[in-house]
Every structure is written in structure tokens, then in C-alpha cells.
Amino acid sequence: MKKFFFVYKTTNMINGKFYIGKHETTKIDDEYLGSGSILKQAIEKYGINNFKREILFFCKNREELNISEAMAAPIDIIKNKSCYNICPGGQGGNTMINFTKEQKDKFRQKMSLINKRRIRTIEHAKKISEANKGIPRPKTSIAMKKLAVQMGNNFPLIKHASHPKNKNGRAKIFKFINNQNKEYVVAGEFDNFCKIHNLSRHYARKYINKGKISFDVRRCNAEIKCINLLGWEIILQRS
Image 1 (spheres, rainbow, N blue to C red):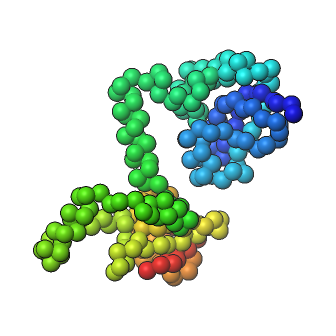
Image 2 (image 1 turned 90 degrees about the horizontal axis):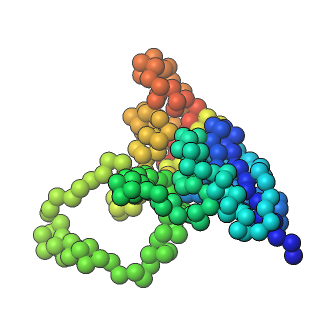
Image 3 (image 1 turned 180 degrees about the horizontal axis):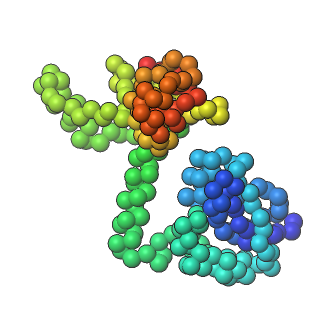
């Protein structure tokens, strides 16, 4: 079966950002868009239908493919703010090959912050729960449980305002429907979701389970976060 080797460019049709990569396949129209971590996050955010792939040029073999990708995605292009690539082409996905120690530490901190703020769907939460079944809890967790029993649970606990929970300690689940009828399911990350989408948390909480949001913008001094809420609907799915 014939194998195709080519360098491609994937473009976000909403903001014009792009990703340059290499691909080898037996099916030239396999709809592959790329494997870059930042590109995947963008596809998840904007939707796969808002991205298009174009083939820049074909190559004869894998060696020529690596060289061609390196030429198509040099370090100058990677520094472009509109580029989703995080390392020059032809380096096999080693994202930190040219990083200094300071840059590596900064990159790890940034990725850690992104993961903490990530909005997880119900399906994602279930997968994490299934994957963690049977895994022993850390000793610190067991020790804290024993301490709680000894003290009769009368010791201070840290409460996170951005993780609303019910009386059973389970995260509340909300469904957000924007003014274009796109749905988001949010488990315990109400405040973070509002922050990411530039929505007023104060007014969002006021209009939970009250249908599509509609109010006189003068009531909130025409604040942009309030205006952004117009037409949205917020439903509490699990209290």
C-alpha cells in the first residue's frame, strides 16, 4: 500500500493562528490536523470544524520529511505569536530541546496552571474516577482521616470558593448554554469557567435555573462581564 509523506499547515479559521507539522499516512484525506498539545487545546476550545489543513509539499521518505519540516517551521516562525508550534520542526516532538533551565521551569509552571484551570466534562470526570479505582490513597490522606476521627472533625478545613460542592462533598454540576446554543458541562469549576469566558460570576449565580439571562445592562453599569452574559442560560444539573 502506498505511503504518503507530506508537510502540512493547519489553520484556525476564527483567529488565523496556525500549526505546521509532518505526517505520513496511507490515506491522504484522513483529516489529521496535528498532535501539538497547544493545537489540541485550541481544537477543543473552538471545535474541529473551525480548523482546516492544507498540504504544503510532499516528500519521498521519512528522512526527507524531517528535513522539510525543519525548513517549514524554523525557530523564527515558532516565535510568532500566531503559531501553535512550541518547538522547531524536525525534532520529533522534543518540545524543550532548545530551552534553558529557566525556560523549562517556566514552561512546566505554565502547563501546571493550565491543567489546574481545565474545565472537565462529566465524561472526563468519570474516566478519571475509573482510572483511579484500586489505586492506594497516599499515607497523608489516611493520616488526615484518622486525625479527623480523633478530633471529632473539629479542625479547620480549607474551602475553595471556585469549587462549589453539595452536602455530600461531591462537586456541583452546571450546564452553561451560551447565546449561540453551545453547551458546556462544568463540574465544580463555576468561578474558573466564568473567568475563562469573561462572565460576571456574581450575576451568573443570580440567574441559575432562571432561563435565558436578560436584564437592563444599566443595573451593572454596562460592565462587559455582565453584557457577555446576555442570552446565556445556566442550569444546575446536580446540586
